[in-house]
Structures are given as structure tokens and as C-alpha cells.
Length: 308
Length: 249
Ligand SMILES: Cc1cc2nc3c(=O)[nH]c(=O)nc-3n(C[C@H](O)[C@H](O)[C@H](O)COP(=O)(O)OP(=O)(O)OC[C@H]3O[C@@H](n4cnc5c(N)ncnc54)[C@H](O)[C@@H]3O)c2cc1C
Image 1 (cartoon, rainbow over the protein chains, first blue to last red):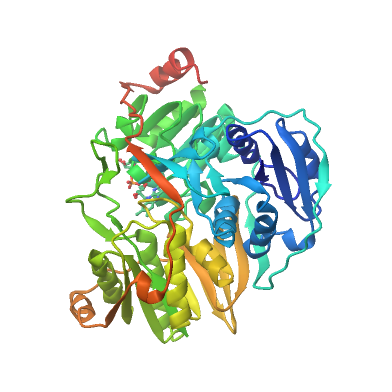
Image 2: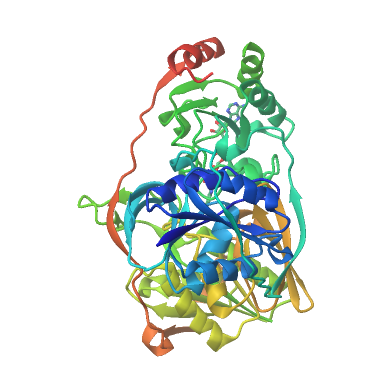
């Protein structure tokens, strides 16, 4: 049986997390179908058709799927899903929102946020903020799974898979879209960036985050934050790194004015190189840092920016 | 309006997690337990809605062993009116918890159900969405603001890239994110009062819910350790190391 993968997109472009999910799926089976559910999203379907390993793109292009409302999209996926052995989505806010609803509609469990595939039915996933790794075997006939993007390479492109239209219009009338505020940024996406520089409570205010933005721009990186910095209103919620925020694993992670609580470490400790800049030499962040600099960030970060 | 909140007993977020030597699970013996932080936010939100006059009753439900009555009492101390424990000693998967909660909802008929977006032990982030599916109700997950209106609730959700506002018909299910509110501390008089509030105990059998196993836990292992590196003495040394040793810039 084939594997159904749910594409992450904004009706304009296919998001990178989809490519990591395809790689995870390819470790479970051969015949991979990619579902693009959205509105006016032909362009996404064309991009989806170019992903290596995909044998067919399913395109459900209908205004009822425009905002990825869980009530409509989950019904669509569960109706299509009965023909598949696995249903996979990236563990993005969309995937996390929709897929458990799909699982319950199909009366099967979900395995969330997998980081390794041992076989077609056995997977690893972090639990307890990444302080333990569970190996789980699914007993369900349809395996519903979300995939942690940073744990799998991105699939390459260059394919030309056929696109098949799906004529299913499902509208629940239970929920409606009101509005959306999406931050525009020229920097690379946080979860895919090669360099991430994050600030914590020690930054003191939102203005000082421009210091980090300047370093990020010199290194072609993205800016992240700890929960404390988000709660204090220095930066928007969607750049929180951690157990309950974004998971990142860049080549270089620079933690500035962040103490290193386990909930923060859960989101960044798989980074290749970790740098910590903190004035408190006892801060736990130093115990995971490859390079630690005990310094006042307001002196060290401007100097770093200047010398890069 | 009646609000149902679900609370889970989990390891305290500050406690250290140990994996059992035989790799069968984590070792929670002698570990400090608490109400899951996201569930605490759910209780706080429900109590605030009651205090604002929008809701008349807040019912706290927990699925778990006898010990989870402590967390129900904690919710009652925050201001919930009564509790329901669904007694089970099994460590249930999300879908089974959702099926039990669905039966409680059918019995209680709340207008709004508020629960945490994820439990900090299993980190699954599933139960609210599954419950919504089982009850065919709308879901407002990862909420950072809730506004009740006539026959509808507007939910501002924390999503990738920013915030999204949805309108949901009632009854609806909402899962909380961190920024929804900052829970109060229970006062001593309220902790005492909570001891006398009603707490009913039901079981999967009395609810008539059949549970099914969906996955098998094969093993639990500690994560790969990261060892501390070196301290550098200056920004110059840091840049030199990143360039020549780590080769990441
Ligand atoms: C349910 C739950 C979920 C959570 N999820 C997350 C999550 O996803 N992500 C997350 O990050 N946290 C999360 N947390 C919060 C976490 O426990 C910590 O509270 C938080 O990470 C602390 O942020 P911080 O390191 O910025 O602040 P603090 O712990 O206050 O640390 C600030 C640091 O800045 C340093 N500093 C101050 N001034 C300067 C200066 N001038 N120069 C240099 N250094 C300076 C200090 O020495 C200190 O080490 C969660 C908590 C709970 C309960």
C-alpha cells in the first residue's frame, strides 16, 4: 500500500518541511503520494510534482481548504487515508493541528514528532523535553505520524510526477477563518536556517534584538528566542525555540543571554555547534556549549557583529 | 455556560528525568509530580471566564490513578467548582484518553472544553484534537487569546509565522498555549476550601468506553549526551575557533 504525505504550504509555495517528511516516508515504503490541499494552489502542486521519490501528487484545490481549517482538511485526509498504510505530515503547527484529528476519525493512534525510522512500523521519538528517547511500534493498520523536520534530510527535486485532481468538497461550518498576522522576513526560515542566533531575557528589551538581527544578517542566519524573551514581549511568539516552540538544528546556534533551561535545550541541542554568550559562568547553557564566552552581551555582541 | 477543563498529572517541569536501567521506561519513583503547566493555564482561563460572569460552572476532569486526585484538588483550589476522576492505573494513549473524555462530555454537556496543547511528559500534542474529532466539534488549538461572543468563540492561535484568528461555533474545544494567561497561585484558604468541593470517581467501565492498544513501547533510552566544550576568553578567539576549528562561518 502507498504512503500519503500531507504537503505544508501557504497556497503559493511548498514549504521545506515537506521535503524532510518525504525522506522519512521513503524509509517506510516505496509508493509515495503527496497531497496538496488548499485553494488556488496549482503552483504548489507543480512544485510538489518535482519532489524526488513522489509517484503521484493529489491536488484538492477548493476554497474550503484555503486556510487549512482542521475541521474540513481532516475530513478530507481521513476519507482519502483509508487507502493508505501510512499518513505523514511535518510536525509544523498545521501538521500538529490537523493530523491527530485525522487519526481519531480513522480510530487509530498517532505517533508524534518522530526522529528516526527503524522499520515500517517502528519509530523513535523524544519524550520529556528530549530527556528520553522512546522507541514505539505502531499496532494500527493505518499509521498516522508527524515528522520532526530537523531529524531528516530534505528530499531533492527534479522529478516530474503526475498530478491528479481530487474532487471532494468538505465544509463543516463549525469553524471560520477570521484573520491572520504573518510576519514577513527576508531572513531564512528559523527551522531551516544554517545559522540561528537566539536571545533570552538577558536582552532586556526588543530594541536590543536588532543587535542579533545584524549578526544574523552577516551570517545569513535567522533569529530565535527563549520563552522568557517572548513572554516579555521582546519578540513575536513564532520564534520561540524549545520543547513547546520551534525545534532547530543548525550548523551554528548562538545563545545570547539565555540560561539554558531544559525546555529551551529541547529545541536546540541537536545543533552542530553551540555558542553561548552569558555573563553568568554558572549558567547551564555552558554545559552544552562547544564554545562559551563569559561576557556582557551588550559588549560582546556588537564586537562580534563588527569583526565578522 | 458550563466549562469543562481537563488536567493531567505529570512530572514537575523542574524535576530531573531519569531513564530506568532496564530501558523499559522513565523512572518516576520519588519524583515530584504536578499539574501539567498547559492544563494549569486551561484551568486559569476557565476560572477567569467564570469570574468575568461569562461562565457559571467549571468542572475539572482528570484521567489517571488515584494520585491524580491531587491535581484535581489543585484545579479546585484555583477556582474550579467540582472534579471528576476517571480512574485507571494504565498509562493510556491519547486516543483512549480522548474516548474517555468524550463520554464525560456527553454526560456533562459543557459549552466549552479547555485543555492543554500538550503534556510535558509524552509531548504528544494530540488529545484535544482527537476529542474534537470524536465529538465532531470545532477546535481552536494553541490559543493565546479567547473571546466569547454570542453563540461563538473567537480564538487567536499561535501558528508558524505568527497569529491566526478563528471563529468557532459552540460547543468548542480549545487547547492552550503559554501566552494565554499566567496562572495564579492558589491561596491557603482556597486550598482548604478545595478539599471540601465534590469529586466524583468514575471508571472506563462505568463510562462504557472500550479501550484499545494502538502502539507498543519497545524501549526508552537516554538521549545522546552533549559534552561541554571550552570557554574562550575573547570575541576574537571565538571568531577564530568558529572559522578554523568548527569551520561553520
Ligand atoms: C510548560 C513549559 C514550557 C516551556 N517551553 C519553553 C520553550 O519552548 N522554550 C524556552 O526557551 N523556554 C520554555 N520554557 C521556559 C523555561 O523553563 C525558562 O524559563 C526559559 O527558557 C528561560 O528563558 P531565558 O534563558 O531567556 O531566561 P533566564 O533563565 O532568566 O536567563 C537569562 C540569562 O541571561 C543572562 N544575562 C542577563 N543579562 C545579561 C547580559 N547583560 N549579558 C549576558 N548575559 C546576561 C543571565 O545570566 C541568565 O543566564 C517553558 C517552561 C514551561 C513551564
